Every structure is written in C-alpha cells, then in structure tokens.
Length: 147
Image (cartoon, rainbow, N blue to C red; front, side, top):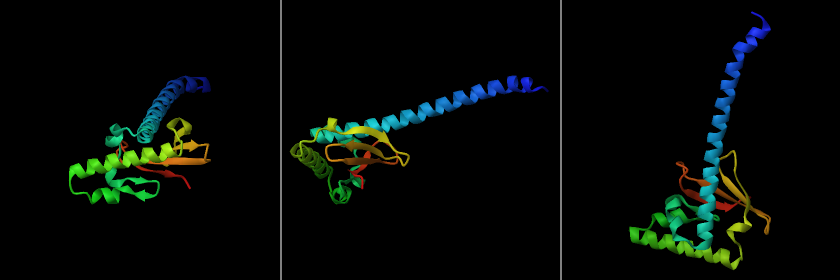
C-alpha cells in the first residue's frame, strides 16, 4: 500500500482521536470550572455573611485559616447546636473580612491546580487563598492561606 493510501485510512482515526481529545478536554475544563465556581460562591457567601452557603461546606472536616473547625463541630451533640455553630462561624468569618476591608472582588486569578485545589490571589496582601474540596467535589472542606 502506498503512503498516500495509509494517510487516507489514518485520517478518520486522527479526526476521531482529535474529537475524543477535545471532548475530554471540555469535560475536564467543565469540572475545573465547576470547582472554581463553587469555591467562589462559598467564599463570597462567607465574606458577605450569607447563611445559604452552609450546605456547601463540609463542616465535620472543615479546616479554615489553620483552625480545625471540624474538631469542634464534631463535638456538638444536636442538629440545633450544629446549625447555631455554622451560623456563628459564618458571622465571625464575615466580620473578620469586613474589619480587614477585604471583599470577594479583591481576590483575583481564580484557578484549579493540578493537585485539585482551587486558589485565588489577594494582591493587596500578596497572598494566595487556597481551597480544598470534599471527595465528592460538592463541598469546601479546607480554606487557608498558601504557604
């Protein structure tokens, strides 16, 4: 078979491979974008004191700014205590950022790293805030300044 004949036979394979690669890339980008949007939403909700983000936080495993929130949370014995703790945390988080005059819009360059974390830069302090999601990718379980 001639070289030209081999190219004709291989062309559909190459096209199919490119389509599969593009589709896989689109799915990966979509998952990465979903993770970034989740972290942006949770962070903005926390900064603004919005209780609606409670469901998007893995309270039992939460590490926030080097504090093991989950350890305290796991010691609570009733759902009412847990909800009160969640609301107290959100109010405290919001107050801390308000006092620092930091807004969600001040955080730039949101991205998902190869290690699965989501990061955003805070140029005003030359710091990077990093988030880690739960195994199912539906809740934030860690947020803190990158070292």
